[in-house]
Image (cartoon, rainbow, N blue to C red; front, side, top):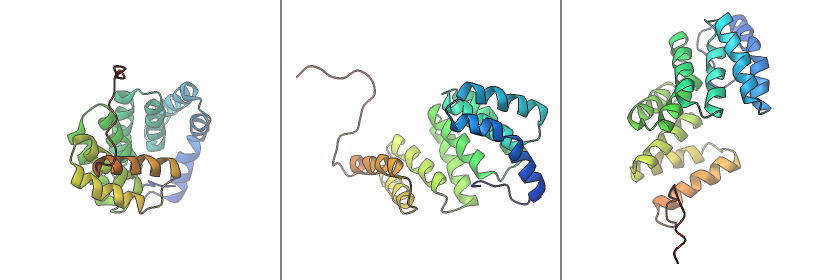
Length: 180
């Protein structure tokens, strides 16, 4: 499992991850609210289970409750400071909350733990792109593409690179301009 916690005993690791399995499956099946309920119960029952907090963060993120997601990722990091997945998740939650400085810091800390981690490369590249730091974004996004990501994400990143190269205009949020 990506983002595994460093020196944790394998048996403890397996038990904690197994305890979160119901919520993980619900999340995979798109049952976000049920996943939040199941993982929330687990996080209370096993307050020291970093996986309960991490996957609860993922469920809140899927529900677009970014502040709650961030709180869960931070709790997972308090329990397991080298938890790469929780660090990247916190970075994305911060990004969605508009806190690009802290999101970038989380991404760079994740890369310090694993210099070629695809998720951390993506996080840093996207944050830099959103900030308009195109030269730096290009470098991270290209490194991300070299990791062989899934097609959907690769196409998204290629779109960002096309904007950076000036091949297409950036998409703007808000209302469409119908005056032609």
